[in-house]
Image (cartoon, rainbow, N blue to C red; front, side, top):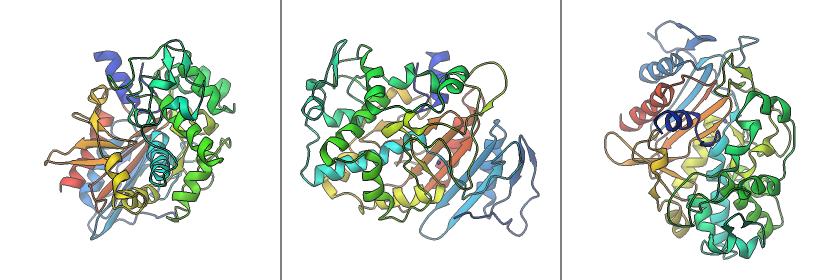
Length: 396
């Protein structure tokens, strides 16, 4: 069973085969809005982008917001509704839960600390967190910081054994519960490892919970404080939040809806104590802020050359092939092939009710960010239409 925080689509595929408000103004000659589930498709200043949003909406999405940026211009589009109860339309500036896209922020902070000489990627987990990773075949003295960030540690994914993220009943029982990083890590460590460190690859949110704990051990401050001080404030990401226990999404935002793969209708899952995701997936943002972050990161404004090169040093991640064929994974960064040749960087994020997808050129000059609310289709069509949008924008 794969983590809800990386991809509900990956979960289903492997099981069966194996987040300033900008209102979109229709361009001259744009087609009229068309009926879709939960609302209407809102025209954008790009017919191609509009067509992709239309395709995403037809896969059962409740709302979608997209931003495509490049050296010449930036385009936004939105479709569906932000709130099913009020019928309020989705808008490009709406906030949303970014889930595992949080990992790129956390990895960036760790690499900043490496660049400052405060730790090494080859340091062991045991060195920084004595006794935390032990028992049930787990041994922190054999796992490095690099392996945490790269998902080659072999540690079990705590989110796969965490009902608040995997079932309606679990969500309704614990959506307001506060969790400590130590509690989340312990859920993963009570399971035997998937493999010996460094011998394979498997996505595990436990890795980033531990990375957040290491940040605190070194700096004396929570990972949320370090991400805010080192990234959010310097880049003026005014709509990006690093919440700790507040279950709300303040300001204009997309509401999330999910059925958790169960029978019956989707339920409103907007309220969630973000400590359930912690350093693996707690953050909130917008398409504009995520674009600014990845552009700054990939252009070298956040990391020194050696650390950015380490982040971009990737290994194959075949577990995720059903969602992104040929994907490779670096340190908190995905490398995904383009149909026109080459590849793009980014990091997907999934949590019940929200799907974040993004892709940027190696230098950060061109990029796409989208978020879709609701479960979407039960097959791979939602994932594929989202991938197609990014691929077409970057190849076009």
